[in-house]
View (cartoon, rainbow, N blue to C red):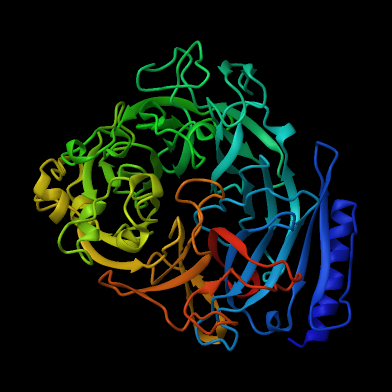
Length: 574
């Protein structure tokens, strides 16, 4: 497509959007190579939110695949933005940022997650964890994006810190809100139930069902009414009913009628560099909901993962295997009912064969220590405190993917020694065992070499990611698309590429990262390697660097990418 055609299409598109939203903030391209135009939505808080596209000439052309990165500036104030990167192998602009969609008027949102996987027709859900705001985008005209909804703090009085999203088949989404209510005291949810919270970024968090227009359909309590173990579930200030409900990771099996969330921590009390490591803030719990009523899920169970054989070796209880259960990933195929969770501070992966059970039983099936031994064969680097992060099961239930940032500053291991990594587990034998699965990492030797049982996951591939900052590879995404004749794409259940972003949260220990987005190739056997052809347009080195002087939207300097997601232009996806 010629640039002039792209500009005309953009102008027509934004005019249509203006009719739909009642707002036209800009239209048509200015002089130069970049087409700039905006869409906007007025939220229930009375604020008009805008999204401004800055499409470069490289955005024009036949249908391609895109990698989206939700990013914020390293230095405030400057706009947060969604970067649209050409992710089509062989494209002349492969690895180039072809559009930045800047967000206004609020800055400092701290862009966090997008949904885990994107399907044709899905809208994009993008959370600002600090601003307590979720933005919703129409992606049909990629590489352009249109803002169609906003969920502001006024829409979720019972929760703060939006984290993870799962888009349902009807286009709505569940989101985990990790922090407590806006105001300390009792808060009443959509179903009429009440919980007492200790305030923003505290406890208890909640689940929110968000419509494709950004409006809240339901606020759902994550905490039990009667409270939980006060010794394990610390709250600062203390609550009348102690709770570990700080939901972070999220996975849904609509066919099984369940939603699974993993609890993280009371974020405001340990997500800063000078925070003490308080053991009873390191959550060990997993929650399963019955979602038969999508607007009123019922909490079925709250279960714990347990410490393993490495625990006694750790210098602080905070780094034992069960601590800070950050992520969850369910299986996908109908014959499988299992789920995995990973612990951020504990550096371990746990599995249950049946997430629909009344009380799911979790067993450790992998310690990150075993993956480290691939490039630290002396076993000197262990999983404890390694900031174990993104976790995903391939759609064909063959592989489990895992990103690890590397041991954080408080642990005391130099970052150039521990480094970060991405590793792949072959989980076919474990899933095939069903309810008779025997794998259990319960001996110290298994920590270093992997589980002994025949059905234990096999380490298919691992690649270190050298990031000597106080951070590393935190979040990732699977490429579930295949390009066929004529540039037409289809969704597939076989993954051949991964992308990972090296950044966590500003101001946290172990959160800075080097701000790169890297691409990895995956063989059918699960071996993973860095895609050295996915190169930064400025440095010429592998990975797209978000530390740069200029962007399509201006000279705003270094930026911090968090959520990443593969997507395809709607017109070429079948």
